[in-house]
Image (cartoon, rainbow, N blue to C red):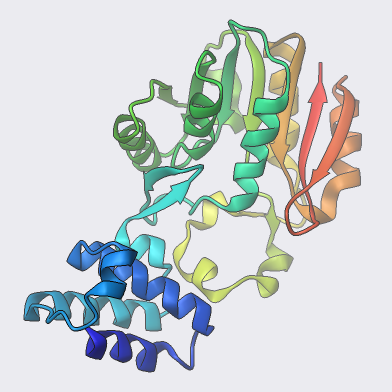
Length: 279
């Protein structure tokens, strides 16, 4: 196994930081060989099968093309849950975990119904079920491929969420119930901000889940706020993950739709990343 570890390090040395290469190595050996990190440390002299070495070489080739490790191994972790991910869905970020924690800290009715608009992998919906088990969670996406992944993740983690196909930009075409809270992490990266993004995101993650035009960057927030003004219960909560550069614009937008107590919270990197307001 030492030779394989050295191979991974040598192949990736000029492309990634050392700490990231060590993390890749641990994940690859866990995925391919079924070895925990402790076993990897103990069994450094273990001889890998040729079939396993072949799988590892193929993974390294994909890493050299900057494909995210999460897509290569087919899974990631979110709030301690294992979630399946494919290029049909965004890879969940730590900042989104913070948004789920903020929702869990917010006082919701004991019989609350919550809608996750644009669920993707289902990470927000399932995170809420984990932290607030009593909440009835509904989640929508307009991608059947994403919904398939979200449903698999619900089964994998033994949570019940009502997933259904709907386009929040055309919410008038579906029938809805009332909700105690609505949350969304919609596309919010402006086309002009692409130049600041990592190549692994640009090349591999789904564009339609990431980008909006510079001409109308708040299109999803405006439509969701309009929707929420009709389908949120009185005193219901609206939560967003937001573009760090559009915080003041977001405050003004939700105020225009009659929401109050709007506040922005910074993420672990100190960036304006979440907004909460109340009907």
